[in-house]
Structures are given as C-alpha cells and as structure tokens.
Amino acid sequence: EAGVAQSPRYKIIEKRQSVAFWCNPISGHATLYWYQQILGQGPKLLIQFQNNGVVDDSQLPKDRFSAERLKGVDSTLKIQPAKLEDSAVYLCASSPLGSHYNSPLHFGNGTRLTVT
Amino acid sequence: QQQVKQSPQSLIVQKGGIPIINCAYENTAFDYFPWYQQFPGKGPALLIAIRPDVSEKKEGRFTISFNKSAKQFSLHIMDSQPGDSATYFCAASTIQGAQKLVFGQGTRLTINP
Image 1: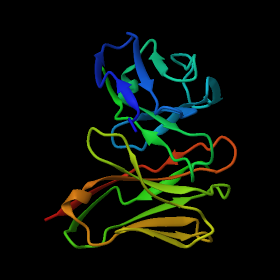
Image 2 (image 1 turned 135 degrees about the vertical axis):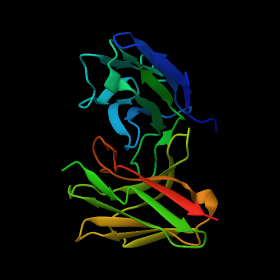
Image 3 (image 1 turned 90 degrees about the vertical axis):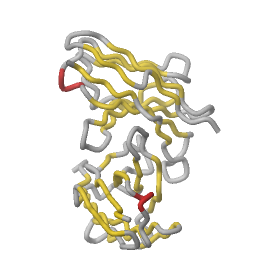
Image 4 (image 1 turned 30 degrees about the vertical axis):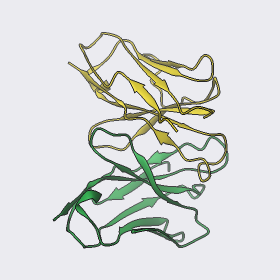
C-alpha cells in the first residue's frame, strides 16, 4: 500500500509569514494526526481527526495554527503568522478505525520547517 | 501525568551488543506501549508494541520488557547491527477513547561496526 504522503519536504520562511502543509493519508484510513517534532524531541500531537471531525486539538496553538480535513481524506495544516519557535518537522500520520494496538499509526516523512 | 520519560538520550554500542532503552510513565490509564524507530529524514515507524497484560514480547531481535507495578518498560535489541543505528522513541496511549499517543524524548542509538 502507498504510504502517507506529505508536501512540501522542506520550507524556509521568515517570521510572521504564513505557511501551509499538505497530507494525504493511506487510502481508507479514517483517523489522521498532525504531530510537531522539534529537533531532539519526540513528536507532540497537535490535532487528531476522525473522518472530517476533530477528536483532539487541545495542544494546537489556535491563535496561529489551523487545520482542516474537509472531505475526510487529505488535510492541510496552516501556520499564520509563524514564529521562530515553530521551526520543527511537521509529521502527518494516519490509522484505520479501531484501537492503536490493532490499527497502529503510519507516519509520513514530514515537512521540515525553518523559520528565520 | 501525560508524560513518558525516556533514557538514555544517546547510546553507543558495539556490533553484537545488547542496547537497552528505558521508559517510565505515570498515567495508569495507559494500556498500549509501542516503540518507534526513526531514521534521519524519515517519519517514525512502528517497531514493536505491548499491552500491560503481558510482561514481555519478542519480535525478531527486538524485545519489550514491561513492569506494570513499576510503571516502566524497556526495549532490548539482541545481536545489534550497524543498520539498527537510529533514534528510538517509546510511547504510550489508551486503547479506548481518543487514543492520544504520547512520545518519549527519544534515544539516539549508534551501533559501531
């Protein structure tokens, strides 16, 4: 099966600019996640969708970050305006419906964002 | 309560040795404990996972040991190879509800030839 697709692979922007990331999950996967991975740290969940509904966005900085999954398939994550501390790899993951034990997460290769 | 603490931060082992990476958690509601392997420029990939009703699980050269009373779990890599050099993350979540996966800080493992 094709994996989780993310684009772009790299993005360099200046602070206060806006940026958007795109994710296409594995076909048939109902649940989609966006994680932020700061250099040297583990991934941190930003937002979790099930189909096109938000399950958890408690760690999403909503004053600057937004995400949508309009048709329950692909998703976009936007940052506006970006801050220096937003420099990180943004990982998208997907999983089928069901428990993590039987339906584990599959990650894409991420988008590396550098904010200067 | 939502944290998973991982150690060591980095580890260097000779080929054939047995690196051990440890994790500890506080939230007793966690009931799913996976380990992920990440190579540079790639996303994390599931390596092996365990539920707390067993104390050990083996898959090939990888073993998870789980101590429910101590709220700790560890990854052992038998007969380690240079190709195992990567960053390893432990994680935890609940199987019910929102299943929010919480990751440890990661261990950069280097296997010298």
